[in-house]
Length: 170
Image (cartoon, rainbow, N blue to C red; front, top):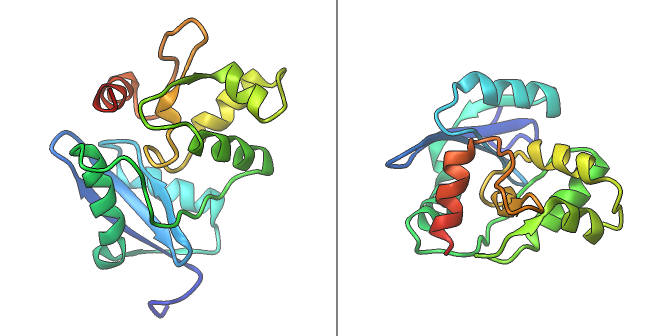
């Protein structure tokens, strides 16, 4: 397939001092940030489920601007992300992920607060499930959501990374 095909998902491996993460983008924007130190198969499985007609192509140059933004955040040189993202999920997931993007840097909210923000106060569990399915860690800041009790709750990338991200934002 040619380089500008709408059916390509471009990927590269982002090497941070603590984590290696596969990141991927379509022509529309960044669509995936993998679980740190997870195998390539995690990205393949996500593409097969969410974008089954797409082809994975290794292309570090296309991902370079996204890698620069992510590394800037991880090195405490950036608080916001300017490049486009391309989120693929159910309509409910999309609403939850949009609410996550509105949580300011350095702040945390509870799962029930997200449920209230999207006007579904009884959908706390569904909100948690949607947050767990967030394909763009860090940029869609699911790490900023904690339990009402103040406990960290789950995180696809593990609680250690969640703690580190929250500490970085303090």
